[in-house]
Length: 264
Length: 248
Image 1 (cartoon, rainbow over the protein chains, first blue to last red):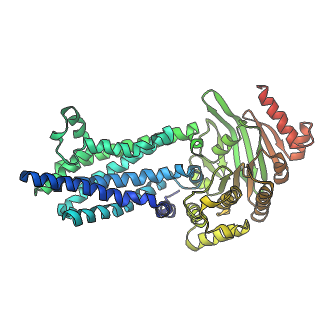
Image 2 (image 1 turned 60 degrees about the vertical axis):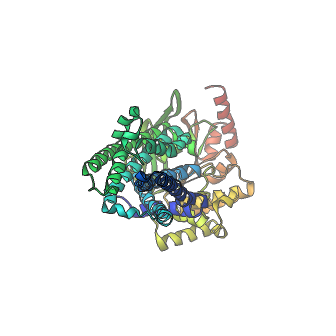
Image 3 (image 1 turned 180 degrees about the vertical axis):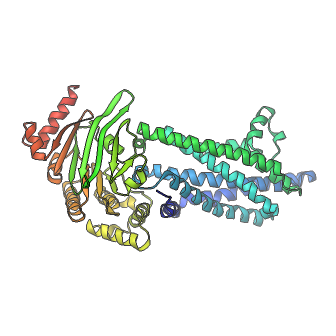
């Protein structure tokens, strides 16, 4: 049986209707991006004011937090899309329809992309209006950088969903928690060398580290470092393959052990 | 047999040391109304969830509408509608929106989906609920909307787990009447679990009793009651529940 575009579209539509009917969910799309940009932009502006040598800090911080939102918005959209089915005890309802797992994953991924567009619009406008910073100055180099981050977000959401399938709703906290671990270890705002020594080896293997490093290089007016992008894409591909394998395995465990009753 | 909608053979499922289902064979013919009965812990819900592809059996085969699970789960589920008394539709959506989502998942789009939703709501006489948020529905209304969700695509097999549990008698009566009309007019087969033996007698042409994961009786309600030496199914149920308490 081939993939059904109608079922994929339905998954996207379901999530948008839920978003529309849940004003508290707009926080992720409006307030959170605004707060992040204001906090990091203000910090950058203050440091630049105190020390003329660190003028580059503001773009670094703003580009860092904006690109972090590519990761954040994508992963949160996908994981909360799945969580919504558990919160509303709808998992068994959808599991007993013809919807295939791959269609569900594609639907959530597309919803994540669309929600990312909305979230990034808020981030870009806030940075432009308050700090005169335009992310577009990174230019077309944004495409491969964002691609690395999107793949990592997708992989991360597979791990979180897999953990929820295996351990139940108590694993929800990881949806947000994992992102901040990545934030701390990826050098979102700073080079790897600024991260404490013992953590640097971990930082260097994270694909996100290479994406953020590439963005800073471009902001410095240098050409896109394709080596960083290649390393980021390679790491992201490994993470995606591992995430997919993990969620497929956890789904098998979920079905074998009858964990669906936890959510119904 | 062309008119067999569901055919399950030798279903076995253990959870750790507990064997929840122990060699269940079950078939349902087109248009047939079958009750899957038994005391708590007998293995009814586990059996249903295996038939729906939500739990993987340790052994046995399941075929629905000619499609084998788990490999052809998606094709098989096109023939199945499922609802349970304990399973509401998503709270945040209005009834029509929620039904529209399920119509899409069952392959109905645009005008066909709208027509199917209007028709199903009308068949169960709850058109007035279409624009109410699901979270504002009473238990009975939720049950009816759940069943409407399950019949939107005119399935060949309707699977219901405890559809009238915790409902007032008048609402339970309406649910039963709706199901009888649905199966009569659409020729849908019904597989239903219930703890209400009077309901099973009224709703089902055939009952399958499960005890300790095994099928212990299969036949017409009166025939099964007679075989156990009771006047009705409640006597059979009580006997089987006592059997479980004795540890057999």
